[in-house]
Length: 296
Length: 282
Image (tube, rainbow over all chains, first blue to last red; front, top):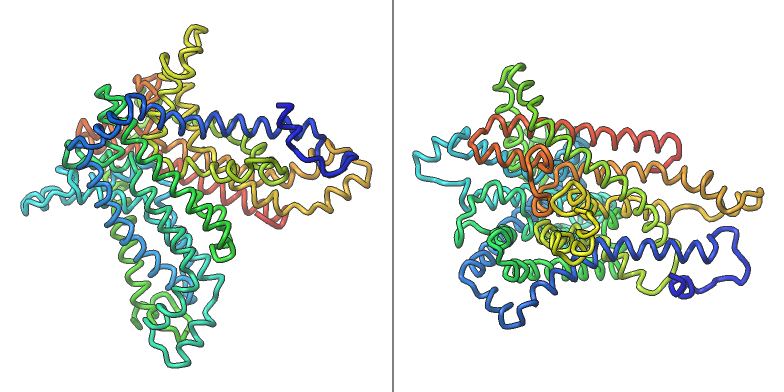
């Protein structure tokens, strides 16, 4: 810890009245590093070490298992549906909210955030209640031979629910900040509505959009609770990567479980890196609440 | 298009697309979020008040809610304490690796909960990386309430830090200088000037972490041991009720949890309204 204190450059030779003593700073930095190291870096390290414990050959063999491959494929499929769907919603909602004045806007913004305050388990439960065998539409769906819950459509729906607010909550404050002048100018110069959106609005919000999509995608690929409730856990069919990790883990196939987990951990790292780059380089062009963009 | 505009009393604008964008957004919101949540509440309201009360006061349900709430509360307190230090250090001090630490704070948002769950279990299980040293000392972390607290601390970690950081950045150094020129030592300046300013965001972050922890499922179930009455959390009990095809029982517990979330949401708004009145910022 004394090394850490030494690493802090002394800004003034005399103790400044608006900062702590060198000793206190060293202790606080040490506590922060210890806390973040123990709770964040250590688990991350453990994932990769456990995954590679059996050697690189065993690692890739675990990833080539047919059930693992189909779990990866399903996760990609679900994200490929859920993310664009929420992107479309985010664009529509933020356009309506930011470019016009109307009654009930505050309520609408609150409702968009609602999925973040709902437990993941409840996010799955609501679709079971609607579409499950004993659900409100269960018998009706069954008579047409349509299965939603315990099948891929249910997984997609639950994923859309838990990732619902990401794009919208990034775009709304951003587009509100930018106002309507650019669009009004484009329209008055004869541009059409879609042309205005494509040429004026979209370039203004592109980094914010990317930021929202990035976080939306990370959550879509990693969601566990909501998807677990609606999945039915059929190996090779309705198992996404996080669910497959649970099955392997409960089967005592630890190395394989950590191998799949390491892929998701890599995804998380790449997400964090791109997110940090976006914040550093385009911080101004992200929502003013950019730092807190993903809170809740 | 004019119909939608008329209903919500839109002010006129030259920008086209109001009807279609708001119409689409409302339809999508209703189909994905509002109708399913309404179905949950409808399912619960099919119970008589006595039936609902019987489920809510069922011994196992009460035990699960107590475990969820208690562990979440402890985790949120840990996060409030360490989160304050981390946020302060990241904003005020310069040291090598600061930016990496700052970026890594968001890891719990990016790392899937199942991955966090098995990693923390591998660390704290009796044969695990750290657990093997704690086990001979009689300290049981995984498969106990302590394990639940650890998982919930992990997933709630960013909330306090990220709510505090922008507020610490905005603290006017001149206020601290004024305190110093008026004869306050550093400890007094922190206790009487800085901490009161940080109280509202600290409380907000605390409630956010608490709310997130109460609903958390994925990271907890691996490390908890899931023993009924002891280490069974409320979201897990919902899953168990569902697996027993007891939809109504599951809905009732879910409705209780939704009510708790709503109270937390209310609390955050009250804190922010109070902060705006008292400090002029959130």
